[in-house]
Length: 552
Image (cartoon, rainbow, N blue to C red; front, side, top):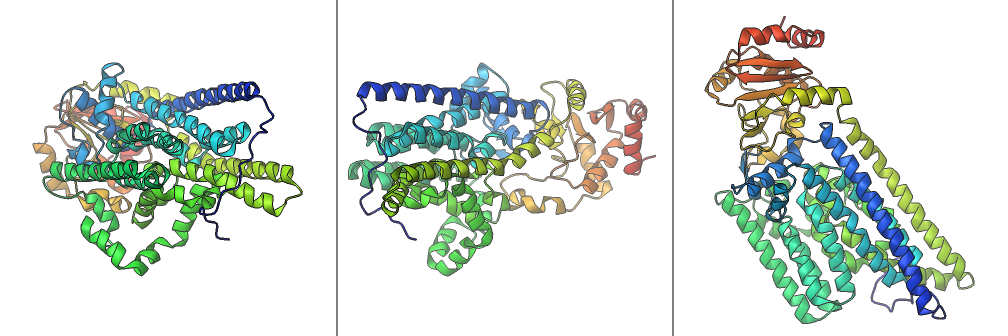
């Protein structure tokens, strides 16, 4: 059944006008108190979740460590040149909002600042959701149900529980933009859109689409102003990335290599070859991805599709990409989709109600209750979709005993020393100018503005340097500490076999001596090699590992 938004919308299920205004205000006050209690609960719960992951080595250099190092460098007045990525932070992503966050590092100098800030941003988004639903549906209860749906949204929880990404901060800004769009307030609308342009290089396209809605919903002047703002933001972000990448476009264009090698070529081919574009878009995987996003709100977005317009650029970017993770709801790629899925679902609720009311005229109360129950059912079923994701992220954390041992070991490394560390071990050592993700810088991997660095699905297939060449690189290196371990079974970007190869080379190289060998291995350049070898043989687990890698 095709439903359009052009026909006059039925009246929402408003509370009877016979109810005194004082009673309405009292009800609204009680529901708002409940809303703020839910916001506080969500904030506390996901702060605890995020900080637990960080404290138990569940986060790493990718992705929290990247933004942590960039923010720390900015807070110290230094250019954000990332040793963790081998490039300028703004060549990887246009995340200028880090300049606004950096002063917080002068108050609380820890990556926990980013995790708490992200959780605050995600939690506060429930307030504009409530306001929108209260206005559109006329019901306090339905507005509260939409707020609960927001907290339980699998995509929101996935973003909030996966390290830190600046685009997550745009979620409440865009939701408030929807509220100002709904209430036809041009100046606050523009103010709420300005910071979003600093969150990621694709935000300009989202703002342009908001401008199209403002053109028809508010007035032409406001729409044109927002269109120009979005276009300017898009140009500035892309040109900034090109500049810091020494005149080269971002390697992220390689995610759309099926359509070309440059952004203009990709854009032209998308338009000039519509059947090819549709064949890539309309796949079982993509349709499942879209369904996963809109199902938790009962597919109500389909009843007001025009409000999904600003989410179209992100939908297309994700569905046309050759990176599988971009078609999953548990990653940051849905940050600019969430606000407009909620706006369209909230706008679609009274449309759906009106259709059902005309179909079942004799049972209006049953229609209202039934639609509410259906929405609640979808909300809680959608929550179940995310439980495995949350449990998996906890599973990836270290035990309390292992965490204590690893923290004692890492305390041996000075704060200003250069370090090459395994991804999951280096995440808590990013406040230094030279921190590398092992095996960098000895062999470049996930490094720089290159197609190879973004080819995540094939990172484990790179060619190893032969032992003589690798030992020559080690001899010339000035990296002071190397850290890797056997307590973590995840050695990205290395396969298990490649990890053992590097471990065998480093543990037998005389330029580095082992200064800690319990669960993890801390190697210091110039340390006593013979003493380190004796330390390795002290623990049974170490001896087993040495046997596995061919050292007896």
